[in-house]
Length: 489
Ligand code: ADQ
Image 1 (tube, rainbow, N blue to C red):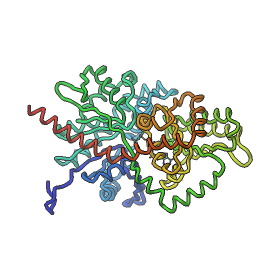
Image 2 (cartoon, protein in one colour):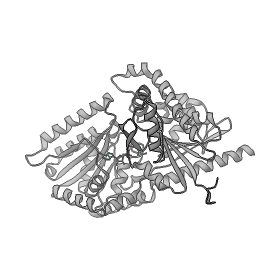
Image 3 (cartoon, rainbow, N blue to C red):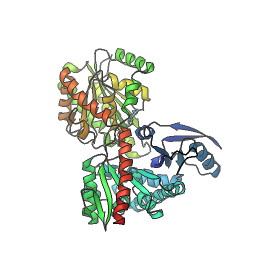
Image 4 (cartoon, rainbow, N blue to C red):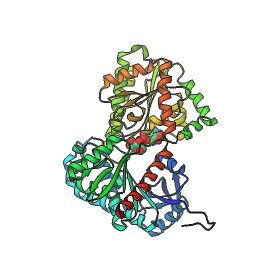
């Protein structure tokens, strides 16, 4: 294809994810306000100049009427976004049900929700049916907008069925699928009633990507043990058809964070924070309020540290910023009250009239406020019980080039594989070990901090989100060309 000025068109990339990078709020029958979220994936793809990206996903609102659907579609088109309209019942069963209640805990080794395990088991079939239906709805929209030569990149556990649906439409479509969460041991995956169908659906893709080599290996083992297929160094082979499986560790747009530190508004904020916490070391946790992030474990470890180290009582503060997510799921509500209760107890126990040891905020911070906080922090603490990668640890490192603070990082976060040599790695289940890590971090000599920071900073600035996206797409293009050559031989 060529443009009217004779130059070749850039390859089109259709990025399909459950949510569009835009949230829509209805203002009237035919008007919408669109709020763009500059998440990691968006910045990654904005930086990839040789592709022309379009987004396909759910806009996060129920739009039952045709007028509303048409006006929203037109407004989103200006942002290169194409909506998939899901009705309330599908969202309830597919998104809240199968994705968040079944797949999310399972992929993070947490099993099915404890209290309603039997109820979940009973509703499993209807939720799985809704999941397949929703994936088919995404596929319909992709198919409608697909042009020959496009690359289709499917994202995450919400869309494991999508590669199969797309290949059924058109076996020549170039389809890649990337999982942002861990892929667990095959012993965990095999407990899923839909284990076989899901694996087969993912294997329809040309390229399947994970954050780490371990997750890729678990996926290949699940295919060999559960489906009886052959694992090869390149991926999984089924009757001569190879699905490439590989690790593509994500990164961040580190320059965006580094540049933000120069913005006057951020510097003003830094000054205020430094005054506010003068004379105290600042520890920071930034997480979505989710059970995988190990927030109660982190706070209990901090309590243990205070118990064992009276010297530090009025010299350290833990700021825990936790954005509430999935607030309509009962397990998440329970987690919120559990965290509040523990924080209240510890502040009651160790606080004074003038200061408390833990500041816990149930909300999200804007980008500039977050950068300011990262930059004044002495010790960042990530205690995820499992985490695909964990970008917070990367963002902290990017903002620390002048301070050279310490990162305490769970060994169960994908980031432990890349930042492990610079961070203090911990098992978040062992609060005694985490308390000792806090002590080590707060007392670390400057020379050692510098050395550890240098390792992490070099990694974060040399493995960016943009490189991640380019690498995945070029591998996908390469994989398809190789497969075509094999077919011809
Ligand atoms: P998440 O589970 O959302 O992502 P993470 O990688 O840490 O986890 O990314 C969170 C993002 O949200 C970061 O960019 C962070 O700045 C932002 N954020 C979190 N709390 C915030 C707050 N209180 N205020 C403002 N911003 C906040 C999933 C997987 C991860 C994987 C990513 C990317 O669970 O393991 O690293 O996708 O693949």
